[in-house]
Amino acid sequence: MFTKSIRKFITILAAFAVLGSYGQKVLNMKDFNIEGVKDVTPIVVEALEKCKKEGYSSLVFPKGTYHFYPTFAPEFFSEITNNDNGLKRTSFPLIGFRDFVVDGNGSDFIYHGKIIPFIIEESSNVKVTNINIDWEVPFTLEGLVVANDETKNTFDIEIKTPYVVEFERLYLSLEREDSPYERKYGKRFAMWEHYNLEIAENIFWDPKTMAPLYNTQLYHLPERGVKAEEIKKGVVRLSAKMKKLPPIGSIFVSKGDYLQNRTSPAFRVFKSKNLEFKNVNVYHAGAMGLIAERSEDITLDGFNVVLRKGSGRMVTTTADATHFCNVKGTVVIKNSIFENMLDDATNVHGTYLRVNKIVDDYTLAVETYHPHQNGYLFGEEGDSVKVVSQKNLQYTTEALILKKVKRVNEKISFITFDKPITGKVEIYDGVENISWHAAAIIENNIVRNNRARSFLITTPRKVVVRNNQLSSQMATFSITGDLGLWNESGPIVDLLIENNVIDNSVFGGNGAQAIFFIEPQYPEKKNKEGIYSKNITIRNNIIKTFDSSILVAASIDGLTFENNQIFQTDTYAPIFPNAKNISIENCTNVVFKGNTYKKIDGKEVTISIDEKSSNVKIDKGDAFSIASKKMKSTSKK
Image (cartoon, rainbow, N blue to C red; front, side, top):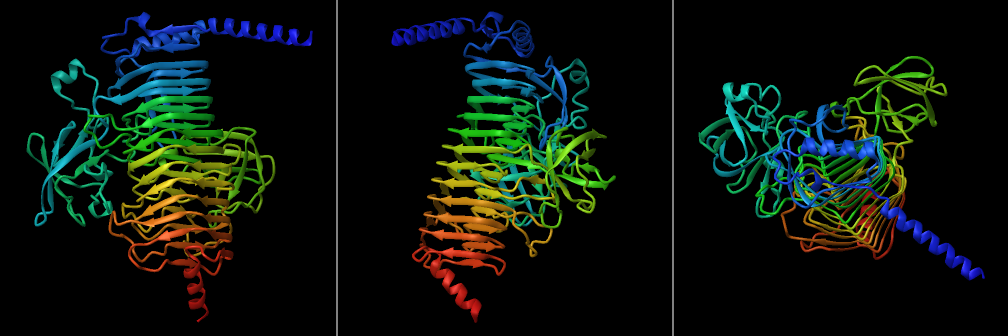
């Protein structure tokens, strides 16, 4: 009898499930006759309005190629952290959506000019899947180096992307909306409206490796004042003082003026939760692939920032592939490829505000510091925060509750606490929102051929990074915190890095970094004090490296480096051959065990442990045990 009742109950549940599936309302863009339409933006916006008004759960595209222009796109003023603020147009204004899916069925979405493909705000349970995002005209200038002259400090580039030479300067030229006025008088305002950007933030790429040139810093160009002369149509001669002229056959890449070259991320996510991005390819974007802030629980599964085959381009996104600021819950990044970005694969962090003025015992005036953080939503009433010393990044208060937040302008806000702060705060100290930090799982991804780093992780929640293949121009892992530039916050409290393959990172020559670069940025580098991060385990990784520095670790309580297989390669000549393989500063409770290091140059393994470090244990038989004993012997003398 009991078994029959269970079976009956299961049958009823199954019936409800079937009814539920039939109850899903799907709007098919095929019904809007969008095939062959020059600009589908207004049609898509109309369809989204219909979905929201009539309760559709999915918007589906027939597989095809669709073009999006900003001409009829809705516009919002967006303050996007770590990107350029301003009026932003979008083709997918997913604002206030619940339980909704956008399915492209593998379609190509081709964008034109300054536009953000997706703005997702105040939404929940949203999924974006099966789409490819690209721009017809890129946000970068790329030119093949066809000649160089060391006596005159000049080199010539053959340019196939749009450009303008005026006032003896070279400008990359972005796609701009057409108008009768401009057809008659020319694009007179393109420069002042930042559609023509003077070359800046330049770098040289190697078309053989499809990565930045080895020892890239040798070819650094000044940010301003690069003289340009058009030799003939498509060929421009550049003149500037450099350490070394770029080799013939390399690719010159520029993304233009700083604070004007992060206008158009592919995805802007704000104040949303339970989002999934699956089987998405971002071939290009004029900023980040995805930037998420003040949101929670985001999954990227097969979210690829990759070059489109046959595009001939060197660069995908002009900034990070993905970026998460003041996000909480769990960030999951898996089964993804990130390549050829002009910045990092991902960055998970909070952001300190700086104390501008102590108003009274309960109130501070706080300010953003870096211009790319102007206007970002630091906190709201009810959030918990702590004050951090500018001198050593140590907390000076217990947790405080925000009772009131009053914004004055994009830089200044007044924040009032539930407890007095008398004597605990100084001007230029930091304030950290401890309510908004994310846990993260980063697994089964590939990072390659990008400028900058693979992963920047700055969060006091549990983070697991495993089974990734990583190769980047700078540090593979950068784990830090600072009150000096980007003001990124969130000391590590539980980080596991395991089973990754790291292949010849740190080839840019941008200072003596390390594969694992774990160091808070104190104002005085020689005066490290206090513990910043805790409980970091780096184990079972395969590390292939041509250069010397493997690990720099500072101000950590609880560091385990175990069972890592390290192989010296001859892929490149070492850039910093005299750097220590391992450097431990101001750390305690450190363990090295089971590591191996196969060297091909015959030199001894090196390690440095400063006098502020304590309880550093290196097991007998570990690759660094002999170096440790020699170091102790030398220090006794």
